[in-house]
Length: 318
Image (cartoon, rainbow, N blue to C red; front, side, top):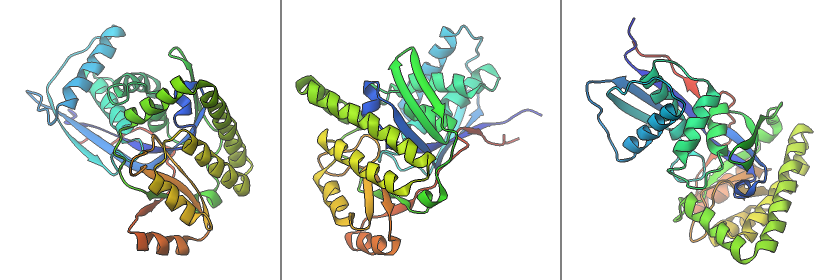
């Protein structure tokens, strides 16, 4: 029976530790979250582009196939997108977008399903359109799912490891994602901002990045040992280091200070300095008090639910 459509979905992600530092060869600990983006491609006589981005991303797939000398056939298509991942809030919406487009168009143009490793290589090249200095950790986590330890030494040397564990249930029950609002800056602009600090205060920044690396490793230990106290201590320290590299807005700092009697939190993702900083990962010891405080401030939050499946080919529509 002829397949009428090809559909893939992929999850968003949060940084537990290592945002920004991962750009400079330091490790990151990232977790996929149970908020997904789905795209469905349907063959058609002529492609109907709904935005200016899709032709660019399509070319990225074609270039990838040409470089690998894979026989391809460009055919027309229509597409539809559904997403539960908030955009521009540090939850990896662009990475999930690149993941599903790569998987869908690779299959559409070649007639074959591709491995996650190959899809990730294509999606990584594609994500550079959104984030010029992309480390590759975002697409890797969205495609692989679960807890990912990622380190990029060089363009040709990357460590992508799925941790042999899941987040302890007692951690998950206490973790929430609080929305401080959409940053005025893009992730790319925040990466450039940190880069300028490196150019002017290189020695200090190197010290901070080394400290972030130690914090990332301590957080992994806390997860493996299910040590919630050690986890909270390092979430707090991680946030302090992010504040030192100026990726946390004054209003976000104020919110975290207001909540520090009931837990510890940190920015997750590129952050934001002028106004809002996107979502913060917050370990809460009293959910009821937190709800009351956030309700008074008009701030929303969502439960933190990990995802362990990563990229999925949805049932094809006949």
